[in-house]
Length: 140
Image (tube, rainbow, N blue to C red):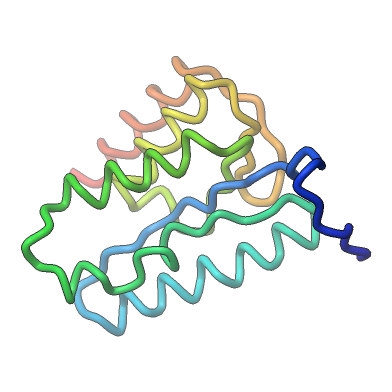
């Protein structure tokens, strides 16, 4: 792959938000989720040429060092990043993350490109809600 010369006069490449689980039972689990997001971002970039936005790495373990910041702060930060992107790429295992469902819902509502299992996908908000309801029923 060739990489263009950086120019402030050039329109930026498409940005693709990497969505998947961050939280885990312990720090090792969180680190494993961060690594999975990083590996997915590399594969996504090689497949599409889009520039990855990886919220897992932007906030990596800051929640451990800033326990005073509520979950809502981190979730809003991720949604702000997502709102600036052109596409969303759902990593393997995203279905087990409530936050990822919310991110995907926002991306669908905003008309972004949707990538699931490495495939560009068209999905309506109604279909997404149906799938989420079905997934939540399996967990309960």
